[in-house]
Amino acid sequence: MSKVSQLKINYYALLAVILAFFAFFMTALVSRTVFERLPHLEDEIAYLYQAKIFAGGQIVIEQPQPRQAFWQPFVIDHNESGNRFGKYTPGWSAVLALGVLLGQAWVINGFLAALTVALVYRLGHEVFSPDVGIIAAILTAFSPAALLLNATLMAHTAALFYTTLFIYAYWRLSHKKRAVVWGAIAGIALGLLAASRPLTTVAIGLPFIVWSGLRLIALFIENYRLSWAEGSPAMIAMLKPLLMLTACTLVLATSIPLFNYAATGDSSQNLYELVWDYDQIGFGECCGRNGHTLEKGFNHAGFDLTLTASDLFGWQLEPITPQLIAHFQTQANNLPVRGYSFFLLPLGVITGLFAFRQGQKRQDILVLIGAIIIWSMVALAWVLFPKNLNYEIGDSTVAQLLKTTPAIIRDPSFAWIWFRVAMIGLLFPLILWVRWQHNPQIPYTWLLLSIVLGIVLVQMLYWIGSQRYSTRYYYEALTAAALLTALPLAWLAQKVNRPLVIGAVLLLTVVTLYHYSTPRIMALYRFNGISSELIAGVEERRTDDSPVLVIINGDATGDNRVRWRAYAALMAVTSPYLDSDIVGARDYGSSGMREQIVAQFPNRQIIEVQAAGNDTWFIDDIDENE
Image 1 (cartoon, rainbow, N blue to C red):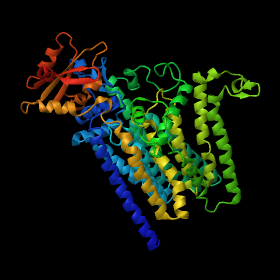
Image 2: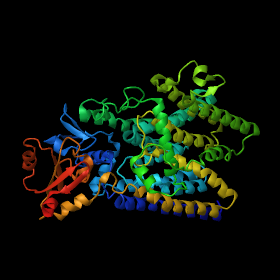
Image 3: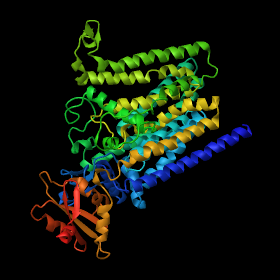
Image 4: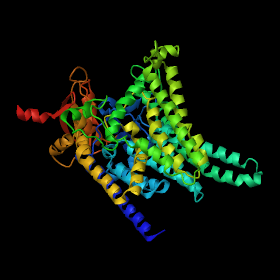
């Protein structure tokens, strides 16, 4: 390696380290200034509650009494077992517990965000080129979705780190050096992902499962004429890390049924259903408030992708107006402005498939081009087909020609058929890429594309979309999208001027940081009316160093009934063990409830607040005004 090349790699590595520190710094900044280190969604409250249970050394706790006084959203009181616990799978809460023990829950996502940026650089560097690695790291570090989600207490930052680590470790296990060790690391990463985001794990893991099977089949065909003594070493060498990967994944994934058993006594219990009985994956009346259909799946995907087109990299030209801010805060349909973050993805696929074709024959290249054209046409037709059943061809519609009706898009059986065919079609080209194993950039380009498209397909199985904290259901595809987007930019850097192109990418991301990311994220400042002011008000009313009991008074029914948002800040600082410095307790006004609450905390200063709807105020403020 030349000295010039060595200097280039060191320069890139230094920039990657700076980007990693930038990711950590921005997590600290946004979590403090925008979210005030408080949960703003029910999901965060439940994650934090369960993390505190784990930090206290238990898996679940006994229901406190009176249990209604200490209710929190998405925290389950299981009457049959008498246990209380969060509804989510245990993976993220167990990791978040480390932050709870440190006294800074936000720091876990900050640390993982920094590691993800560094890993994206290494992955792109090793699979494609140093230029791809550094450009992808820049895009990841400055992604508006990343800047937003990293600052929350949601599981998605950790899930993206696990995804990136899994892809990188799988890449390394394909090499002979320490393959089993890398297989274990890949299995741990995928197992942690499964324990945190099970449905997402399907989208991430399935392409690599298929690719592993195809590699094994290809090796078997290659060696089937050889004797066992001659052919078995190669098969065993490939199988060992894959078996280690599988074993580690399954061990960690079993934390879900084990947690379910500890919580409810039933390892197969879907804890989501204990909150809403319709909170299930799939199609039909079983799933969603009013049933889930393929039509709804398409609608949600369409809505979410319009936001992803802006939030992924911030490539959006329109100014952030008050109307757009209101959309971020309250709407979950099509974003009213156009984003361009997907613009380079198709070029990235083409670059990945054709720019690394060293040594390929002309005939092979023609086969590759033909396969891509045919696949693209068939895939586009399959995607458009359910949405265009009323399209007229001559005197008939598409539905009539197929001897069906447009209502088939709402049929659960057809929905499952469409989904399965779509997933098979997405992964089928991997069969073709086996012949290009010696150019791994080609199959890895398709594996990355499979993650980006597969996560959209898999999330269509869920009855609701996600836009409030960006399109977080798609977030774990950020690494794959960043690498694919970086491919054409890296090709341009190599052909034109490397410092110029990379400098332009850096400048573009800085512009998006101020033009789009900052106002877009600030739109969530004190979202849901949740702020640190309630905690500050409690601190102002302390008379000594005694711990505090804050009693929340308000209606339990009617238009003015108290919502969780009114006192969410108190939920965030109340320990499940009720031994925290501040304990918030809701008085529903039922006979004897207040006395029962007060009797549990004889040595605490009592502070009274009144709540109605999403609003809360201190009772002594009313007395002073009067």
